[in-house]
Length: 516
Image: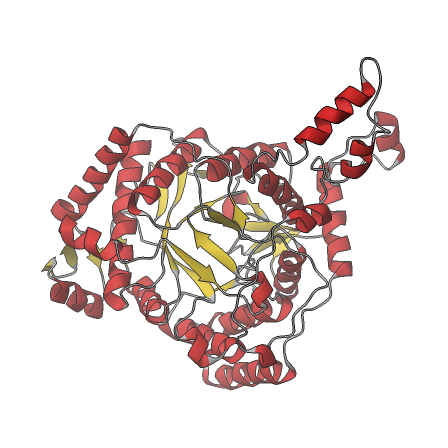
C-alpha cells in the first residue's frame, strides 16, 4: 500500500471548533495520516504482580528516599500540599502522590494551527514525532557538520511533507550560527512557519518558555493558548532523583498555560541508574511520577505525558547504546505502568547509535519501534532523523524513517477483513494452477493491498546495477532532496507572519549575543 492510498483509506478526523479561522490558511496540498488509532493489543511482557512490585518500589523511593526539587516556589507548593520537606528534599506520601497524578487526563487533543492536523494523545492513540536536539547534521552530500538554520528549516519542511509524522518537533537540529540567547526565537518561528502541524516548546529557561507561549499566542490567539494544548515540551529529571530549577521554571510556564509537558527522566542505565533493567524502571517511574504530581500543584487537571528516555550504557566505554533488547524491555514495563496510572505516555522510536543510515541503524530502529508500538506508546518521539545517539540528524535517515512510519502505521492499524469475501470469491474464480493478476479483485485492490516502500530496492541485481548500484543511504538522500524540491509552504496569515517577525526583532534587541 502506498502512502496516498493509506491516506485515502484513513478515517476522516476534524478538530478545532472553527477557532481563529482568520489566522489560518489551511493547506490541502500535502496529505497526512490522522492520529494512529492502534487496533492491535498492547503486549504485556510481565504479569500484573511484577508491575505491582515495581509500582510499590517506586512509591517507597519517594516516601523513604525522596526527590530533590531545587526551586523555592516548588518547595513552597509541596509544603502547602502536605509533603514532608527538608530543605530541597521532598518526601511524598503515596496517597498524596496518587491523588495528584490521578487528576491528569488520560487523553487530550493537541491542536495544530491547521485544525485538520490536530491529533489525539493517550488511550489507543499514537502519534509520531521527529527527533530533537542534534548539534550536527549528516547533510545531503553525506557530510557531517554543525547544523544551521537552513537545515532546521529543511527538517521542518520534511516533517510537514511526511504523511505519517504528526508533529514538527522544534529543535530537530541546532541552528549553531545563531547566538544561544536568541536561538529559541528562530527555532519556534521555523516550526510555525514551515509546517502547520503541532510543534514542541523550548525549556532551557523561563524567559524562553514565555517567548514560546507569546509566539504561539500570536498564531493561535492568546485566549486560546491560555487553556488549550497547542504544543508539547520536554522536561528531564536529572537522574538520579533531581528536578532542577531550569526544568521547574519551564514546567511552571507551560503547565499554568494548560500545555502538556513530557515528564521524562533522562536515564543512562548503569550510570545514572543501577545496572539493572527493573531497578532502572523503578527509579525512573518514581522520578516521572514526582514531576507529574508537581504539575498538578501548578494547575490541577492540566494534560501531561508520562515519559522516559532510557538507554543502556556500554559498561566498557560508558557510551550510550541504542536498539538494545534491554531498552525494548524497559519500554514494555513503562507502558504497563502508564496503563496502570491511566496516563498518556511517551517513548522513543528510531533512536540509534549508528553514525550512518546503514544496517546497524536499521536493526536498532526496528528493535525500538517494534517495542514502542507493541508497548502501546502514545507519543513516539525521535521517530525521524536520529543518528549517533542523538548528536546528529541525518537527511537520509529522516527520509527513510518517514517512509517506514507509514508501514508501522499500517502494522499498528491491525488486520482488515473488509475484502475477505471478495478474496475468497477470487480463489474460486481462479481455481488450481491459475493466477490472480487479471481478476477483478486484484484490479480493485492491487494499489492498496500491500505496503510498497519506494526507498527499498526489490529489483533484480541487473536492474539495480544498471540504475547506478545505489545503496540505501544514497537513495535516502535523494528522497530527501526530492521532498524538499516538492515542498510548498503552508502560508501563515500575513498579519500573523508580520507579528511574529516584529516580536522576534524586538526580543533580539533586548537579548545578549552570549550566555552569561
